Image (tube, rainbow, N blue to C red; front, side, top):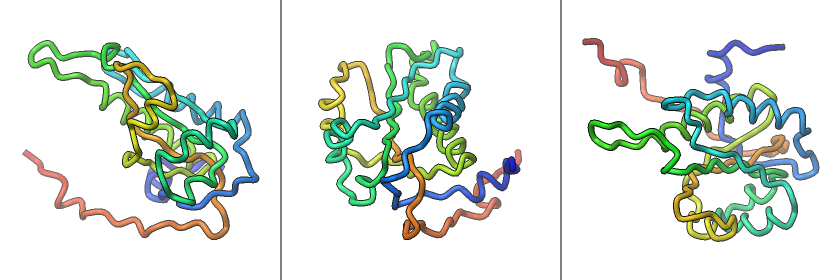
Length: 173
């Protein structure tokens, strides 16, 4: 059953608890990753790459970058990285689109995962220096966000979704 878009965004939550015995099938991962690939970017430059960490060796190496027990349970960790030099730069003020492009891609990825029944938790509070070192990234590469990917455990923690009322966020001119 395909979920209505508004239902999809309203029901997506950050999940803090994963079933380590249930890896996400490759065909499901491919659909999730394709949603990120299809995200709009400035001048369609797609200055990002998606790293899917699934091997036990790499999972062990990167897990210390975010010290939460529930994070260690996920069978996959998805990392969105980008190259500032590959992104579009606005000529009038040299603003670089990298973070915006990566944010749109990450949003597509987490929504696609939710549509597939795969849990995520968008994480920005990771140890970027450690992760940069473990992944052997170049100085020009930046890690934007990471998320566990997996099926929620029966005792997974989720927090109530609270948002400001629309009247506080919208201004008509």
